[in-house]
Image (cartoon, rainbow, N blue to C red; front, top):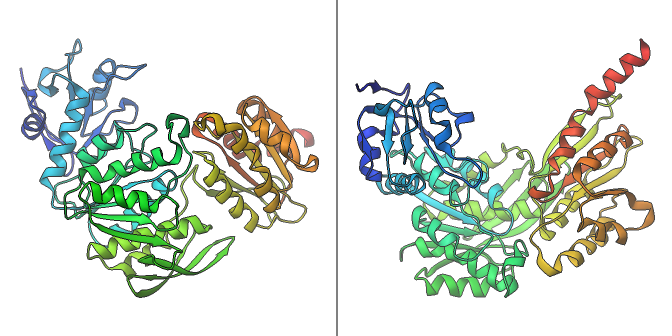
Length: 485
């Protein structure tokens, strides 16, 4: 017995289109409005793809996904009890998702932007997505969906009528961006910067990282445009890599006097940044809610790319002023711990970290004056995948922390022990082995007016500290009520 399933809104994939794209078999008729690989967040109308991971097999959650309203499921084996008419049977579900992504890319006339870089790629992707949305229907990858799962998933969600597509591509080893670029096939490729992230996997250091980032050019044709950071030492190397791969249209951004998008003036304040620039000879002034020169420079890459594809650069620049920093990447929150007129300022930078990103974050922290009786406090977890240089790169953060007038530093992790030992004694708050231990210490030392920044690599799990700080207002309120009782 077969059934017909029709999704509740605009169709992204029909059963016949999905079968044709993947070479799979669909016995029923259905249409899907989205694509998901997570049964926990499935939305009615989604096409659920049962991916087999290292720990879990998505096939074990097919029945649950269908009960939650998934239009159909892509499977390589039929789960017991599943309605066969709502299955697309393929030989390999990950390859099927890649096939859907390639088909989605092939059927659209969208201008496609690819973004990579050691740091700043997610923020740049978000800026690009918001800016292009002011100009037309724009599709961009969610969160940091930039790996061998995230890129094809993001592509498979792109509608045929999209005007602009924006995709982030990441790596921690060589030869990981090449297949992603082959799927995205960007018209414009942006490389934000090259820094010692994941350097333990590259015997030739920053040159190897630069070469790996330059793999983004491999999926482009001879009309492709490279947008490169003119300020970094690896610029000439990356430009040569672009030319070697057939990309000869190279444009640049940064503070360098020869940059095509050149930062001419910048005013950084605690509540944002005012930027003056010249882009392909045209003067422009705009603002960002994010503080920090690194964000301003990446915004130039965004506006340069938009101008190069014929978009309205000034309209796009106006939209950038609306962007709020996302959670884990500079989001600010204000915590009332007893004095509503003198809150604690929490800066959540817990999603990721590298030496370059750490120093940029410290400069932002330096701009924010504590409230009455408050202090600047940095809560830091290990920066990972730095190889043999890890200990020194952590210890070297002591000087920029001092330059940023940070009063107290709390650290966790084996590598951050090197920083903690290198701090001035008056700056030393506490060091713990884990972020969980740190989360039990830090909330008790905060006072109204403090400015607190939490940062570390994702694997350092500094979000545990952020959640403990977020819970502080209600915890202290409950404590006060108990005291009065």
